[in-house]
Length: 318
Image 1 (cartoon, helix red, strand yellow):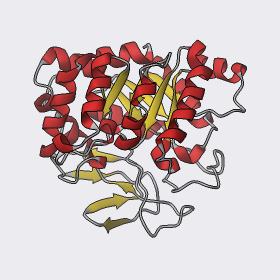
Image 2: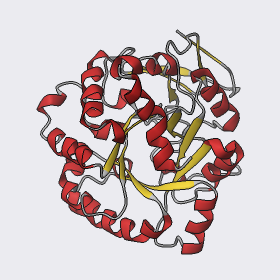
Image 3: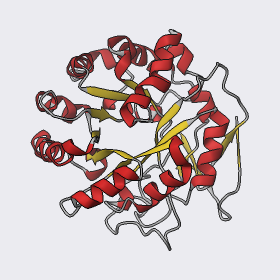
């Protein structure tokens, strides 16, 4: 069970299908972590959203989330007993990374960022963003509606060449089909690649998905990382998502050195029927309840420390 803190004065809640949403920006769980959370544990995928009057969103965005900044982020980290965090540039800010990077700096050495760039981004811009905490560049293909592997391949090759001398990796949010379609190219890249949200493999019937062996081979190679994140994006079996356990265990057993964990907080979402410029309610998620699934997914303590501490420490250079 979760309670809500009213960080936004005008809040509403509604049912969309089987999922509950709210415009309030922080869900406080009544639970506590039920395992010994390792020191240095990192949430590798969160977003912060500033006031639109100061940090405007792009006009062609597909949704508009409520405001949710560093104060709420600190509460999220505290309730999960987390030490580190990675702020991911969301699609609705386009290539204006200002709020993510300023928030990263405000968080200090406990935070890093993943940015979005384009052809207008200069070497000077990249250097400055690395100094501010940037460690990766995101290709948000799914949200951008890119499901053509050849289009994705061209973007991937170009981006890898662009960032290879800046110590940055590429983070990809794409369908499993697109990932499998560009796998041969990923092996040849001069930078590591990180896949969001279980590499978009659906938990139900995952063994039968033709893209899975390709993704497992990529994981074995060490060229990629996979985020065990956005659990509700691959499963509808909430609140305990029992069907995800076997997939998570398979990934960790395949290469524990290349797995990361993330909450996907504050759980932004698009909802059919809501105009892109209207505030879209957050998905209500009990983050502690989901976090407490990890010891069941990763019963080996050494591997758990790798996923939560060592791997993000290496990738994001904490």
